[in-house]
Image (cartoon, rainbow, N blue to C red):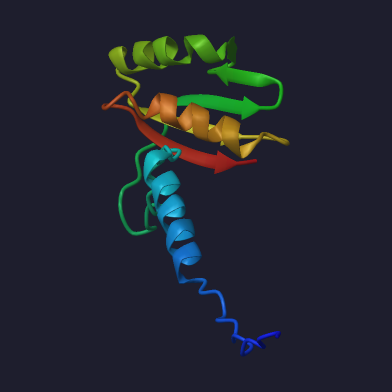
Length: 127
């Protein structure tokens, strides 16, 4: 004699535990990874036409060929020292002239280097 068992209904598989595990893994990897820190370059508004404007006392030309400070070539590694010498000699206002196809990264690198000198005022112009 063969007993016929009643057909069992299949319960649908719950995805809740799977979603919980994926969420926990995502949270773990987000909290354990390191994020890149971005540097900041402060850019102020240009001077108004009504006030007195300081005249730049030195000129730094930034081009794809390199850097020229007051007409003489300066290497990127020597820029901080050369700018510090300018400040020590009383030249506290520097005009940074960007020429040609200079990259933005190069400009930001130079500006970051120059911003380490607290007494130096920097004005940026594009040619």
